[in-house]
View (cartoon, rainbow, N blue to C red):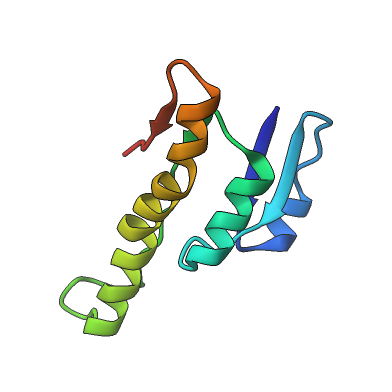
Length: 100
């Protein structure tokens, strides 16, 4: 079974497959991530958040940089931290994949 999450419910609604279950999830919110992990109970986890502000790094504010770090780095840490205990209990070789 495949579980897909996104903060954008409209995009999730475009996924139409009987073996893919979807849920709105905000990777910048630890409680939302934990709820998603409890819902899916993954044995394998694919982490691929991605967000950048518009413009160059010279134009980025500290706030925009902090948001990018929270979304692109801390989100992966939150997801792995939320899922790993259950993955270790359920599987012989749990995997958390972070493509870049």
